[in-house]
Amino acid sequence: MRHTSHADFALRVLLYLRVAPGRRGSVGEMSAAHRVSRNHLDKVVQRLAGAGLVETSRGRGGGVRLVRDPATITVGEVMRTMENDFAVVECLGPARYCRIAGVCGARNVFAQALDAYFEVLDASSIEDIAGNDQGLRGALGMIQNAGGG
Image (cartoon, rainbow, N blue to C red; front, side, top):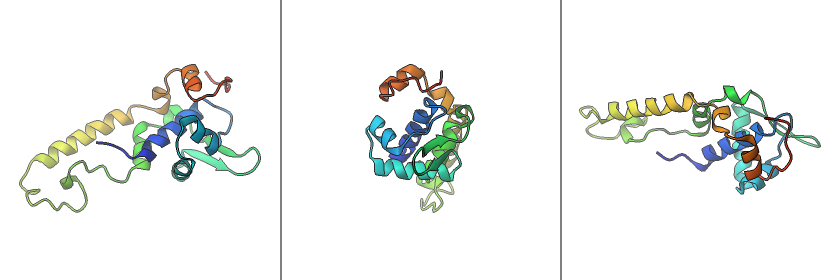
């Protein structure tokens, strides 16, 4: 299974904000730090804001900030926020066009696999995947300590 770039970018935004506690990050800063499209990141941030994971504000002193403690935001929650389709096989999707769906056991196997996948993602928070703050700040070009661990 492969997720969209928006899901990947959402995790990157949250990790960026995680190592910059107490301050707002701009979409421009984050897109430059991750070397990704500002336009795409704008869309991602809006979706994260709609889900109540970040808050945005305009103007001087504005930007994006985490609304919740990163330890309470699970990777599974982020994936569900950013992705619309987890049907890894057709019979898991809403249409179920497969002619043998009613007599084949594959649906149950893939449904169990998907449940196990989300069990792992739901057990992992943004805090858990952040790794080393100094290393992450360095990789993102955030030279100064942003006030966090």
